[in-house]
Amino acid sequence: MAEVIQIPRRTLHDEVALRLREMLVEGRIAPGAKLNERELCALLCISRTPLREAIKLMAAEGLVDLLPNRGAVAVRLSESDVVHAFEVLAGLEGMSGELAAQRITDSELAEIRALHYEMLACFTRSDLSGYYRFNARIHVAINSAAKNPLLSKTYREINARVQSLRFRTNQNKPMWKLAMKQHEQMLEALDARDSVAARTVLVEHVLRKRDVVLELMRTGDAHSSVAAEPGAT
Amino acid sequence: MAEVIQIPRRTLHDEVALRLREMLVEGRIAPGAKLNERELCALLCISRTPLREAIKLMAAEGLVDLLPNRGAVAVRLSESDVVHAFEVLAGLEGMSGELAAQRITDSELAEIRALHYEMLACFTRSDLSGYYRFNARIHVAINSAAKNPLLSKTYREINARVQSLRFRTNQNKPMWKLAMKQHEQMLEALDARDSVAARTVLVEHVLRKRDVVLELMRTGDAHSSVAAEPGAT
DNA sequence: AATTTGTATTTTGAATTCAAATATGCAACG
DNA sequence: CGTTGCATATTTGAATTCAAAATACAAATT
Image (tube, rainbow over all chains, first blue to last red; front, side, top):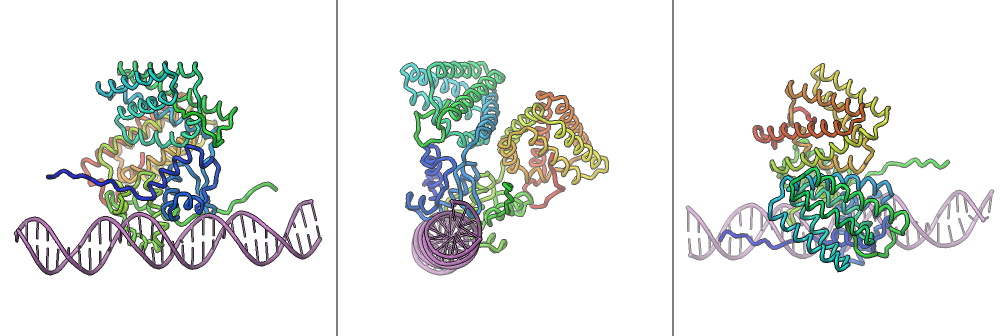
């Protein structure tokens, strides 16, 4: 009887951080907005302490800026912030693809292929939200196949900075088709264990997404609280 | 008269975080050690609130783990943690070198060259701590020349995870000579605006450092609180 | 002797309070 | 009308308190 069954414990500050992150992605806390402690405590029915602690977590993640004696504000990304972020993300995801091509197991590859088919089904049905769900799972699987948890974590955190913007992008049919094509190339590169090709297609994939986000920032009200369809790659 | 002269303000939790980070690097808080709030508050003569907030910052930076109802412990890196971290660092610093080669200005290059000569002088005098000081400044300058602040920040944060270990590595003369050689190659690549060469030499540089750190972990008491000479690349 | 149970003490998480800093509103003045 | 000064209200940062959870230790039981 040596089996240990852990009871999951979650501190309140952690729960609060999760909530606030969601609210940032959904736009319920707008970029540039002041995080008023009294209001947020009233909204979430908690005392200030776990809220402040949650805010510190998010400050370290780059999601909010702490202004001494003025509290915290939600980060508002400039165009150059976005360019910088995608540049780093391209590097990280390229690295991820490269390592995945070297380290992927047959069963991991099969899982990605199956997810790819499921995503293809959504594409065929023009089911964008289903497509995005499988798309996200494929990217997680590729990151996982790279077998570097720190790389995955780093990618996730930097991605979180731009997630609200990515969340707002739509796909028109030609762009969508191109994204599908790139996904196919990813799969081929992984299958062939061709790390150079995997890196290349993943970098291109991220940079294309950067361009979509930048376009949205230039033409649309990208910082508005009205969310479009969920978006990813 | 539109110039704004800010008066620097620093919150106590931020100061505390700085102190704790130092204590981690110096080994005054050992890897795996429990961060006892009462003791640390007594040591730093502060109340628990800013200490807890500082700990949350550091948890998000990956320097400590938060254990619900058990407080925080300083991260103790396994060998695979170190391998993963250096793998990511190599990717980031390679990216940094690549971008720096593309974006560096003549005056930035001249500054790096001057720092290189100063570092060479320390090498000639066998002044290891002086060498490390200039070494660090060169790396900061290369990161800066890449002109992606997020990349620099990401590198800095991941480097902070392994800084305590790097701090403990010594240089024997042949290794030191090899490091100098690599630095010269970095300078040449940057001068030639050869981004592939810059990436290559910086990646090698980081991976060599990884090997030194791993060797120290395998043979020495890398987690002891007795610090050797300050070490970097 | 080893294990379990009960109790006291310590530590942690969160709520509350206190004090300083900031923001806002309004009247007086040039 | 714009600026300045002052009072008041609000917010933030930090200290203190409260309550729950964890740990330590002694006594009881097997």
